[in-house]
Image 1 (cartoon, one colour):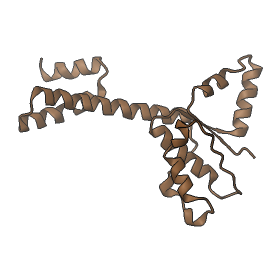
Image 2 (image 1 turned 90 degrees about the vertical axis):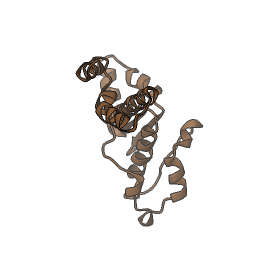
Image 3 (image 1 turned 180 degrees about the vertical axis):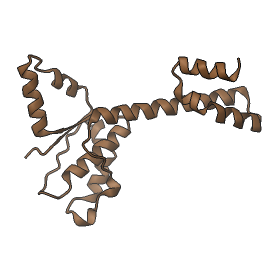
Length: 169
């Protein structure tokens, strides 16, 4: 099979990651005289990496975070939060134990920033999450009730690993 036919077959089979890495992997394999198994292994690794990246992008989109926030951007010195506890939450261990986490504090203490940073890291690690401004959630639930589809959103949230309710107060 010629190169172009191989690339077309990869496109037809929706092997985008493998297709994108094909020339580099084949070039390296030719230069270093890799075995067929090594080449196939590298192509499969490229496919797996592409799948993982697409899955993470999809989950991040479904989560609907209003802004991109990271823990690295948070100024712990300017806020009275417990840094060690926040870093522990950031690792997502509370998901495995199915524990709730509530961030409480005054205006400007960074609750929203931290909630987004923690949730986004959990989603990047494989969790399914969803972010809501509480007023927007209530409006969506009321709209759902008006059109006779009560429980549809609740059904979606039951399948989520993590739900963030912002601006609860």
